[in-house]
Image (cartoon, rainbow, N blue to C red):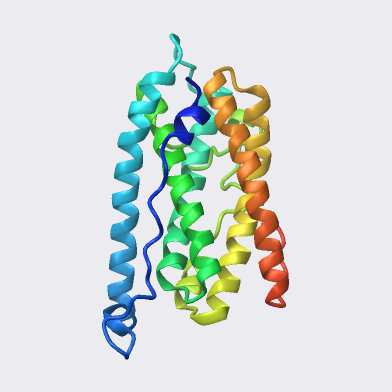
Length: 236
């Protein structure tokens, strides 16, 4: 059973309807202070990562090869790097879903959050079974591609994340779209390399599915930015 076939059997829950209000003044969510929303968002990330990790361990047991790829291999390096990449994308998606007032943006953020949480669980499950660390050592990102770097392309800085959390309304949506689009495009080369070079079929399948999904999402985000009179960010 491949990773993609297992993934297709798991249907994500419907996105929470944050438009339901307790009263005419916007309900508890809109009346809550920013710090309370941040606590809820962080809690949601932790719960999703826990669930995703448990699901990934089960999937990993079913799809793991009879041998374990070595540290520094394409398979291990890709999973470690992409785990870091996915964690940040999930963090941004949870914040956008929890704070946007635009239904289209809330659905997009939910889709990214759901798919990448499930993929993160799978990647962590495989790494645990192969007795490899869950993330790349700092400063050694993309070493499996022969080009160790202090950071991966497309990653948001702490200043970027602070700006996202400080925004509201359409500026929030634009900030999210710009950061997430750059994030997707920054990880594309790694996904394509793993899809072509990984030794484990399940890892190649996962990387291929990421290329397909994130390419489509990038096209959607580019269109949504244009509709709001904004342009993509240059690659960092």
